[in-house]
Length: 308
Image (tube, rainbow, N blue to C red):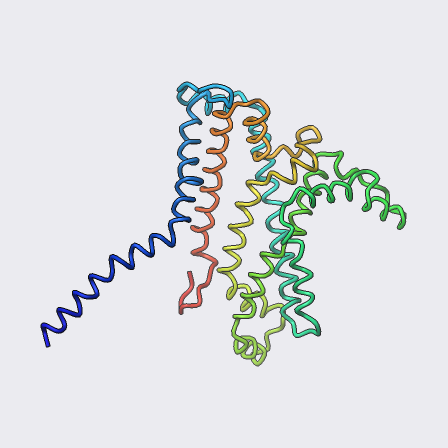
């Protein structure tokens, strides 16, 4: 019996290397893509951030000079940095609140609800494409569709893209409009909330508003954390909308860090300087996500018998 068991174990051990090789083969496209298209460029950009590398010439090592110039001499960096934070603070809460609101409506038992879910998700399929940004620009220009509708109702036209504050808000509306991915996740979370909790709360006399704050929000708090984190990261890296709609204007009022990095790298050809800015942005994203994870201990509830 012991010999039979040892033979069986030996046979299994001999099969594992072959299975292991097949596993490596199947995931090799991802491994090659990760090392060739993600890890290597990441490390290379870190090295370039300490050089004066340009696309047209080889760079030489200059130490922390790029970072020193960035923080001490580049007045556009701090303006872009503040605008990027302001844009994220303005965009992310609006998008998540709107996505949750629509998800709660689509969670109701309504006729043809699947059609409505598809329609509401369509804008997110388009993503942050150039075509959608151009369409948004034509809608909110001085003689665009939005101002023409305002004139019909006797409302004065608004210079949406001609003033820094309204231009940044207009671009934020484009991102809020593309709420479909967050909405789908919220909808999945709402469907997983046990109905027994609502029934028990109703018996205890809790109204709909109290049920929302004491049952719905705690139960979907992990999804809120995930959506908040992903949308914050996306907002901090925004590029397409500000590039196509305003190109950073007016008066650098929408000159976000993503656009500054692009112009430093491909307009002035200061690739090393742009790499330094990219790493500063990376550290900001890392800091924000770390803070979100740390704060989640106080407000995220996991359905495992305890609260985190």
